[in-house]
Length: 130
Image (cartoon, rainbow, N blue to C red; front, side, top):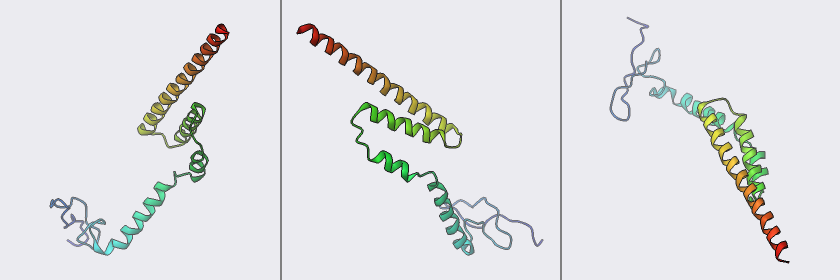
């Protein structure tokens, strides 16, 4: 019967038959049809452009100039990254990343508080000696 859809005749890299449907008028699916090579290449180019849309060069440049020598610098970077992550589409991966980043920020903040307390104690100790 003409017009009935069939399976792709190609073999996958591992030698198993392709399980995709063949394109109408072809013996192969989109991935295996030699006549679709240019359309596949264009789809890959479009896919690559789509992935790069999340790249923000202004953010990279702004944060790239920092020395990150102080705890405040690290906290500022983490806050900026958390804000960027919050702007992404909601997903399990995004939620995990936010949780991880917030935990790191909390640890950095806690460390900063402890450093300040130790510094104050050292100052009080020095005053007591003089």
